[in-house]
Image (cartoon, rainbow, N blue to C red):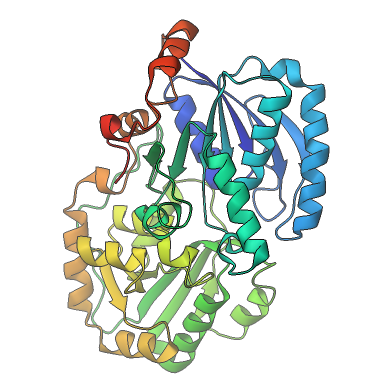
Length: 405
């Protein structure tokens, strides 16, 4: 059993909570040091040991740097408590910097350091001196980690391999749906809808992409009563400040609020004919490389996705038959597609998706344990095994573990 310390940029983020639940589900002891943002789950209280480092914000990078320095001082005062953990998982680059600095200050060279890269931030792809400095800093820390976790092969092909020249251990943990101990079955057959019913298009999850909202609004205006658009999830108002006013102006667009229970997803996706799954927030970089939660959640419940061809999301949808792709991310392309869509096509794709095995879309404990095997001990194993394994393990564990996809 390992003792895992998470460095969390937002302890209330749904994906962070899921990741901690995953590791606990494998039988490991978990604690965290964390910041907190205010755009989701404001009343969430962790039920595991957590050292609060203070509030954080979206953007405002100079302020975040100052808070990292202050957090390092708080961690130093609590350094004795850090001696219990043997694996540190830093979720995003800010947290990797903090974990690496604290590992040095606390003389914890024995701790296994994991970098979970959630997204390739736009700062790292800037073609100027700032971008070069950010890439240099990340490259230096990549050489000091024991495992890199990514959620999409696009991050490797598009960034870590060609740009950062990274060839160390990689764990591919796609954003599959995690049910833990919950029983949430998949539908047995496509839903029945009458032929003349309006197409219901969903936009579900983290709602932060202004270009996506513009496309959906254009479709709603052009198609009128022939389409209904349902938005569900956490709105990032720093990115979509006019979200509420925009929704209020369109009677065929509805915001159903956020959701907390995984069981709610079944009703959300069953009520939709299609979902918009493409992220356009950072086109040309992160948005082209990622594989979003939406395609796994939607597919688990048999709902076809729409994305943009030429992106990692679009390629996965095409290769696995998970929905439909557009050649261009324009209102004209989306409107023309929706106007030409036959309900029988939707039903056929839904039936195909529901016939695919659960593990294509759902993360099971066995897969999770295999992916994280290079750094997490199996339950019942002691610290001596950890020391001997880290001393004898090769730097590149991908071939033996099948980690690179």
